[in-house]
Length: 329
Image 1 (cartoon, rainbow, N blue to C red):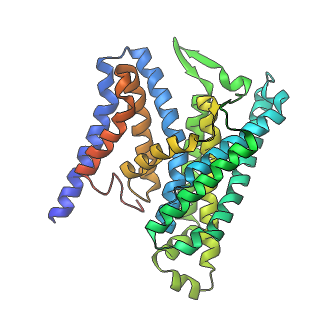
Image 2 (cartoon, helix red, strand yellow):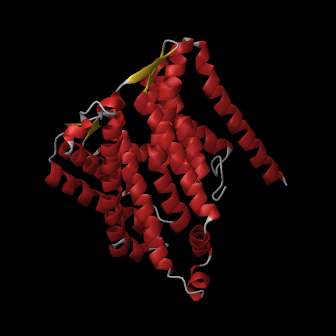
């Protein structure tokens, strides 16, 4: 009973802290600037969710710690970058239809290429180390080195400026509040991805089989389902989400570079730890906390922006060691 009470109070305290984190900046930030920072923080949070959701799915459903996720993220950004270069006329066109069309083409291409890479990784190396976390860390770290070097071979070692579709780079002026279009697009994409993941995992037969396979692989195999094929599909889906996050984030930051995955993988793990390992809802909440706190602190105390999320992670773990949401919630 004591443990249950402690956990309940832990969640209430962390939720209360999140509300304070959301409202406290009002003291030192003018109203219009606050709203602009909030929209930017929500957009950044949704982009981090796209990256963290892949980490969360792979760990939560397969019990695999995948350090190669950051490299897959970078591959998604570079594949999208190549598509934009090939279809430059559509990117630079003053047409919402053409801009969205080229964005969707780049998105599909990036997810397909990186999902294929994920299938290869799962079949060649991950399948051999199921159940051994230390080996998973070592072998996926090695895969990261290989994938990043392949980026340097194929696209070169230099940083590149990410091309942004023309209409995406514009903004709306709503009551003197500047709202950038692409930030709104990021928020919508994040919500759609969250809804699709929750629907597949909780409302479809496939999601039920995969979740059952995590609990008892032998039983699922005995029922005639190929659990390894299902796990390959889950890993490919997680890789595809990494590609989606990579392309979306590269447009947001307007740059691509070979080691970009390492930076955002750190943020992704912070998000997953805050939200709770294996919880998609937790990843969403954790990503929003990270995105908002980073933007607020970057405005108020720029030198502390990089460390504030680590501090939040430590505080939440002290109050609630399992994160905000246990796995499966």
